[in-house]
Length: 196
Image (cartoon, rainbow, N blue to C red; front, side):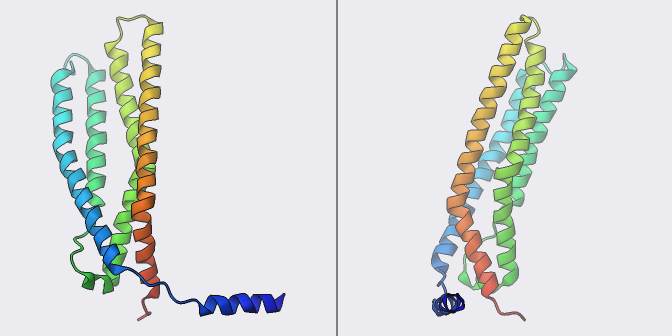
């Protein structure tokens, strides 16, 4: 048994260290940075337009519940926009920066935060949207019968929940393919750095 363990240990030690493809890491970070810039630009345009349109089209001055639901939607959209801006990766135009341990730690933290947004915080965003929409629909559908209102509430809640869950899972799978390898490669680079 001990001989078998020693053979495995020698085999492990004989393995060559994994060579990092710094070029592909830099290219991946640049690609992520470009995508983030596009997403943020889209969010910076669509967030105020959506909030403005909702306040313009909804009778929020007539009912306090609708006003509260619009504030919840506005808060949720601004909250997600703020998280997206905080997770922006730093410009990665030169490979010389990869010798900087602080740079690597910052990039890892920001990419991991993007992961967290998709895995964790988007469900909170979905909950806030559902809460706000159900408050509004409860008030706006008041003239309808109770059965019709409950049916609309259930259909709205289930369809929005299903759609958002599907979108979140799709985004997490995408991050598994794109961000996770970069995070692991940068962590390995940090582990290889000699202690000062």
